[in-house]
Length: 135
Image 1 (cartoon, one colour):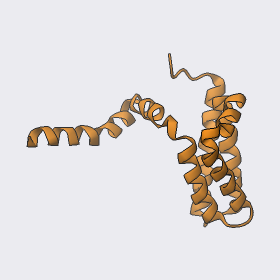
Image 2 (cartoon, rainbow, N blue to C red):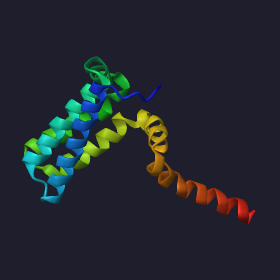
Image 3 (tube, one colour):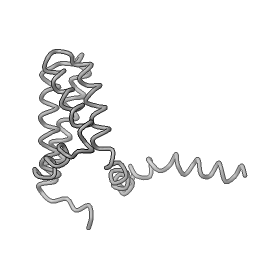
Image 4 (tube, one colour):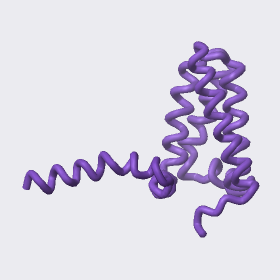
């Protein structure tokens, strides 16, 4: 089974969830530096546990991922030097560049979730129906 969740992967997903939660909470509380740093630590640890330590190191040090890795680490630096808004924006850009190759896999996984997958596919199905009926 390609999406089998072992206990280690569950812990990694939980840490990623905590990281996203703390980052969201920090943004709501006017870019609180402490919560942003805690969110980053949880998120990075969760990714490392989910993918494995060696795979994470290879992901961040791969030659074609330098742009995303540098952007993400620069964003963390900006958070620590009290520029949280700039730091968050640079981190988001770094995440999109760094994990851009995973989007098809993430999309396939999300489509398999019973109710959530149908909600995600509904706009696409509606557009397909409208284009078929208009032609």
